[in-house]
Amino acid sequence: MFGRKKDNLEKYYNKKSQLNSRLQKDVIRNGTAYLSCKVGGLDDILSKFSTKGLEALDGEFKDELLSFADCIPQEYPLVLEILGPKFTEDEKEMIREAVVSDADYLLGKTEADNRHHRKVFWWMVAGTVGSGVLLGVIKHFVDEVPLEFFYVLFWLFADALVRYLFVEHGDYKNDKIRAGRIASMKVEFVEGK
Image 1 (cartoon, rainbow, N blue to C red):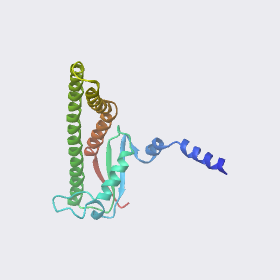
Image 2: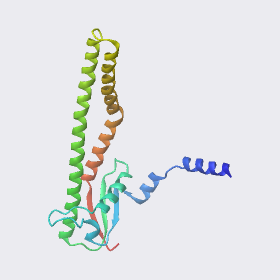
Image 3: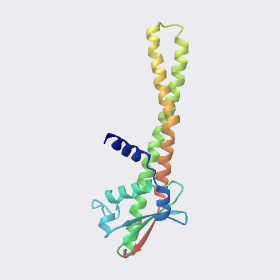
Image 4: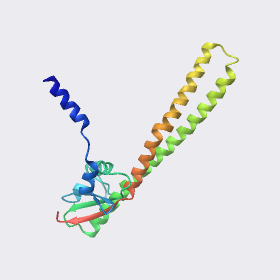
């Protein structure tokens, strides 16, 4: 019995995704990814907390949209395909504007986060260089015990710098691409589905 459970765990661990073929079959058409969302009306798309002229996407709708977009490789442009009732031209424009507006806010927040992280990076560079120079100068004048404090300070800055360069920088770049991709998304309407 125990061997069978272990075999099942190994089988689950070794299971491979068929995501690329699934996306090619269901989502990708002519080099573009179509994110199809079925709605019953405006209330499924727009937040009930929106005010006229400042409509925002419903949180659940937006979460579903972003979650779906994250499954699609970055090189594909996105089209939000809204399947549902016949919307008036004003309603279509309201939906498009809500998508553009929410995407702009996401992009703006991502850009602000990236600016903050760049500032932190430059402070880490300055801290690493400064504490390294300080360590080199004062090691001739200070005992062993206080010198350890400057070693800790140097490695604190150096660790944050290395982590940014080799781990976080790629994540921040991917976040920016994701936000820019969402902000570039087109919206199309398909009636009666």
